[in-house]
Length: 130
Image 1 (tube, rainbow, N blue to C red):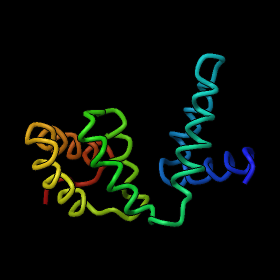
Image 2 (cartoon, rainbow, N blue to C red; image 1 turned 180 degrees about the vertical axis):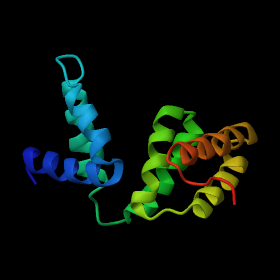
Image 3 (cartoon, rainbow, N blue to C red; image 1 turned 180 degrees about the horizontal axis):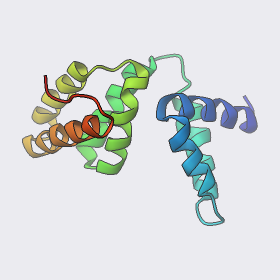
């Protein structure tokens, strides 16, 4: 793929995973300061990595959530917790990632993410407690 094709493929995946509303907000907020960065994210993160055939989006979602827990990046984590359902990730699977992250990333990180996930599901109108 050339750069333009990679960007277009990335934009398509980005929309599928994060939703049109989020992507439209990002694109509508482009300016001289952040424009190149947003293009790079779309082209490389979404066009180079998320389009690769080696892992399904479902698995990429789980991996991304785990890495964001370990890096303590709550804004991005919240975004990817919301997006996980688009990739077929269940709450039970997210719970298992959080349980594993408690061991490898620490109890405080997992605890904070349990609360964050429940707040995301509440915001989305999904019952977070069964």
